[in-house]
Length: 223
Length: 226
Image 1 (cartoon, each protein chain N blue to C red):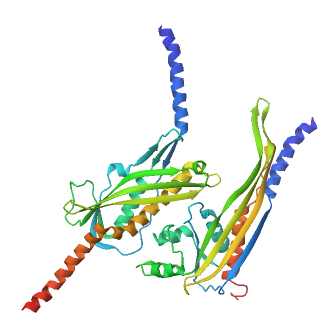
Image 2 (cartoon, rainbow over the protein chains, first blue to last red):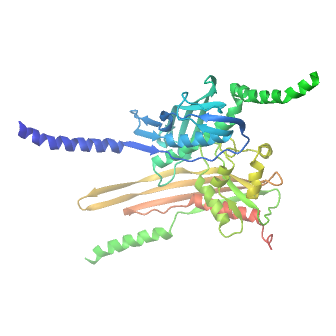
Image 3 (cartoon, each protein chain N blue to C red):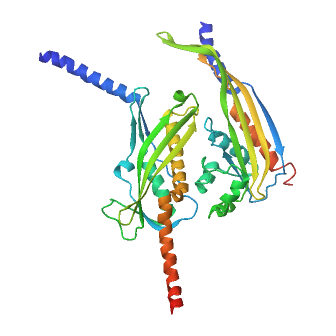
């Protein structure tokens, strides 16, 4: 009996190693580590608090559907870089929050929390078009200094890259994701003022400032 | 016995020949000139690719090729696409890039944009739109490995076609100075007698060289600098 076990164990071990190697060979891994430029344009006269959850910072999309090979796509670092740079440049000053809503500094006017809702991609052999395409959807949440919800909105981003000779599928997909993330940054920057709730929130401090400025003049008039 | 030794030298010769031979390519260039190009010292040119179409994308490799051809010792200062697009983020992304001169005027009202363009000394923005695609292919090549060795036999051929249009915007005068279109076709061959021998038609490269030569003539007409 033990002799049989001794015979089987090395074979089983060998088989397990070979199976693991075969499975690992079928899984494509992509890690996107892009850096992104700060947007050019005017800033909002506020201090923003940015909270990036551990899930967001380490986001990995796993695709193990039956009709395509397995993919592990890690976009956490790149999307953290993007949102940190873009949101940080949209306001006069920014503070990164280690926790939310536990500790928010007193000078923070608005807190923004992004979340990944969805990531999709297509390969040239699936679409019969010689481009890799990526779609990413983000849920954006904004809170005031008291932790009350100010606005929830969605950002959709698209990126594509043509197939290139001697370029791997992983490299092409990483490039398409970087382009999609740049698009997310552009949409975030351009669309921020178009969210009605944010428009109202951004206008409120300005109204308060103008009222404050007008107050002494009014008092003078009364006297 | 002697013939046995001739085979490797024959194959070596064939492989060497591929370095010099290639498929044939024909390139035709058309130009529409509205105003004469002029570049002063300190003026620069930006070459950008259009990326708004859903079914193709102007290849970044073509844009860098045209930029390198223009910049290469021809006294035209070319700003790289990535450097320019990063410096003016997010205003030249596929979603936001100005499609007409009028949109460029609106873009200049955004704080910081005019300043950055002035810092680069941008006089011309060249937008290139188009792509290179494989239009037809035929033939087949089979490869096999055996105890006696490995080898491939067969014949493959494919056609490629490039279609690009370059719109030249004069940033200072706010007008479209002209347009250049480049069409290139070429057929590549790959006979395989033990070893595949690629005879590649460099369609995109030739289209790039054609556009760059015409752009150079457009931006720096002969005798303009003298």
